[in-house]
Amino acid sequence: MRAIVRNRYGSAEVLRIEEVPKPVPKDDEVLVKVHAASVNPADWRVMRADPFLIRLMGMGLLRPKHSILGADFAGRVEATGASATQFQPGDEVFGDLSPPQGEWGGFAEYVCARETAVALKPSGLTFEQGAAAALAGLTALQGLRDPGRIQPGQRVLINGASGGVGTFAVQIAKSFGAEVTGVCSTRNLDLVRSLGAGHVIDYTQEDCTRSGQLYDLIIDAAAYRSVSDYKRILSPHGIYVLVGGAPARLFQALLLAPWISMTAKKRFCALQSSWRAKANADSLVLLKELLESGKVVPVIDQRYTLEQVPEAIRYVETGRARGKVVITMEDDI
Image (tube, rainbow, N blue to C red; front, top):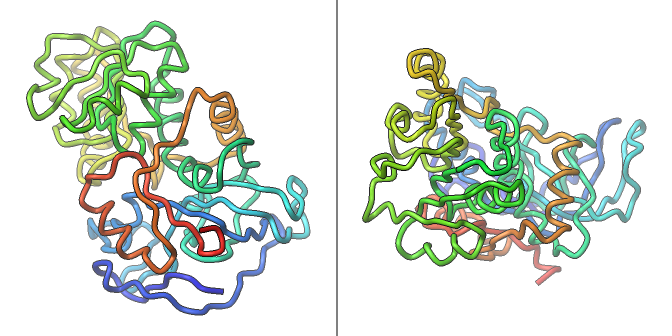
C-alpha cells in the first residue's frame, strides 16, 4: 500500500510517499481501507518533535517511533481480528488513531484500529466529513461535557472558534443549549456566527479577557494567553478548559491549574490526555448522533491528495485553517 512515511524528525520535507506492507489486524482490531483522512496540529507537532518533550512521551527519543502520521480517518472495514465482533467487512466507519488508543497511521491507504477507537460513519456524511470529525469533534465534545460540565443556559466562551476544534465546540455547545460567544479573527466572524454563536469577538480589535462579560465556561482552543488571564471573566464557580494551542500552554495549565483553582475559587483544567481527547465507543457514538441530527456539521477548509500531505501539513502549521483540512485518496476524487 502507499503511505506517507518519515524516518526522522523535522519539517514537512522529511515526509515522503512510499510503498509499505499492508498492516494485519490484531485480535481486537479492524483493518480499514482508508477513503479519507484529516490533518491536525498534533501531526506537525509530532513531525517536528515540538516541543522536545514529545520525544519523552512515547514518540521516540532519537528517531520517530511511528513512521506514519495521521489520527483521523474514515473508510470501509476490510477485515476483522479474531476477537473483534462489533464490525463486519463492508461497514463504513470513522475513528481516531491518536495515542493512547492508537498508534497513528492515518496517512496511508489502509489502517488497523482498535474497535474502541472506531464507530460507524454517520449516515448522510461523506468519507471526507467523517474523517474531519473524529479527533477535533471528540476534543470539543469531551472538553465541554467532562471537565467543562456544560449545562443548558450557561454562557460559554469559545476561544479559537474558527479552527478545527473550535468549529465543533461552537456547534456542540449550541446543541447543549448554551449561549455561545466565539472568539476569532475578522475574516472568520461570519463563519462563527453561521455555526450558532450568538455573539462574536474579533480578537484583532478587542481583548476578550477585558470585555467585562462573565462566562460560566471557557473552552480555549487557541491558548495565546496565559491561563491566569481568564480569571477575571469567569463567573463564580466558572470553569476554564484548555483543549488546544501550543503544548507549552497545555503544560502550563496542567501545572498551574490546581493552584489557580484553589486561589481563585474557580476551576481551571486541561483536557488530560497525551493527545487531548480519548476515543472511546460512547463518545464516538454520541458524536455520531450529533452529526446525524444535523446539529453539528464538519467545516472543511481545504482538500489534498495523499501525495500532498506535506503541503497540507504546512498549511495547518500556519494556524490559518478555517475548520478542517482533509486528505482524500485518489480513488475517491
